[in-house]
Length: 269
Image (cartoon, rainbow, N blue to C red):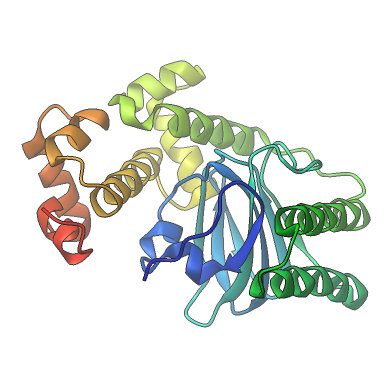
């Protein structure tokens, strides 16, 4: 059965449950409609935050505001808990994604205690469950803010390259379904396509075009496996000039046709 949870109040799951059986849901660039807090407890992986490639390890805390581009590869042995919060419902979520490496044992124990208490609340049906979930999520964000202040008393200013890549990912997240070209994005950012490509490769380990294609692919696969929308409509919504071009795009990146991907997921034709 696919993992589901209420959207009206905060809910704690594992990162694996958030992927709902498809690693691509995490590893391809994407965004969430909810604010997201992730606490890792095992493994070594990689995370892309607004285009910046970072290592992800044990006792890392990640806060991602809604509609921010992110991609996570937790690694084969990776394990993390994911707290999903309706966008804007909990005070203190930063405007941009923040990754903290928490080495203090007391700080580690504090967030573990908060998340364990929240998990216990979810395991049984009790009155005022939504209020309890809201309170636990608020405690988690308070912990994050305190820990951030202790670890990063003065957050370093991002470099010019990092600011450019962040601006590109913000534009790509808002316009990936428009069919805009790399030249269009470069013009919007007042740089050349060559410079944008070079800077993205340096910060993210992939070109701007590859990042945009991966974001479109995530949206395409999500629509194919989570809905019964006709392939032609998905293609048009994502800015493709024809269903045939869309099918070639999906086939090139996955080795499967849109129909096969949908059939594999059991969502119909």
